[in-house]
Image 1 (spheres, rainbow, N blue to C red):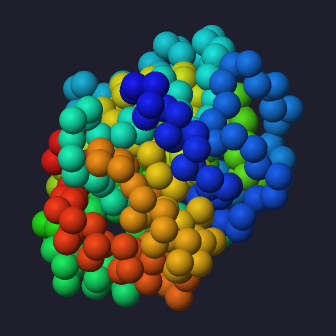
Image 2 (cartoon, rainbow, N blue to C red):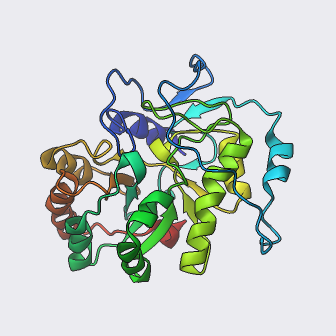
Amino acid sequence: MSVSRRTLLMVVAGGALAGCGARAAGTGSASSSASAPAAAGPTSAPESTPDPTPEPAGRPPHEPTRAETVERYGALAPSEWGLDVSGVVTALPDGESAMALTFDACGGPGGNGYDADLIDFLRAHGVPATLFLNARWIDANPDEFERLAADPLFEIGNHGTAHRPLSVTGRSAYGIAGTGGVGEVYDEVAGNARKLTGLLGHPPRFFRSGTAHYDDVATRVVADLGQGVAGFTVNGDDGATYSAAEVRRQVSSAPPGAIVIGHMNHPGGGTAPGVAGAVPGLLAAGRGFVRLSDVL
């Protein structure tokens, strides 16, 4: 990513991206690197951890097993941590004039709601979007999932099995404990990928972790599992905590080529009215909208 795009990410990420949780106090820069102090461990009790992902008989030949992944990466120490690390796509390709709206549905403690107003608005205006769905949200909303999956306006992305930051050392973000090793990284990504593959008939193209935080070893695991690692350029709703006016301001100011992150699991919040306030003006100005797979 160019220097200008990297600088933009750090500025517009804004406050805490709690990933469908409440705003976290005292959050600093949107991204940290190897120079940042190492986290001592989770800052709160982790969300429930699923059992290790079973090894199915019908595994595609290109997909590594959990054991192979642990053997390959288990001895590696990460050198980067945050929102913008190696392997994370934080903007559309250089020269792209459109922008990508992406919405997370976190599930579990992060919320199993469904923002029908947001989805209805996108449909009414023919605006495509990439929807990152967590396994628990899918289980809680089977009918809504089926309708979303059948709608060509949307593509479905992988938002993890238990909505955890993706770390091989257990680093946490916004009070949500990260995966505690390479095996747990594998489970977080592969568990929901297999669920989505069974439901959609094809594997998801993109993965976004809970809180959108990664380390640079974890992103290599995601790549080995055949998924692109999605970050963002503009934080559209700050973990579903922004008011409608703040969401409208953030989305309206997104530059060409931006990936905008928002949330679709908090109906009644500011996301839907804020997006509805921003999109007509962008369309009138000639801005296009794409799904991630349309240009990546």
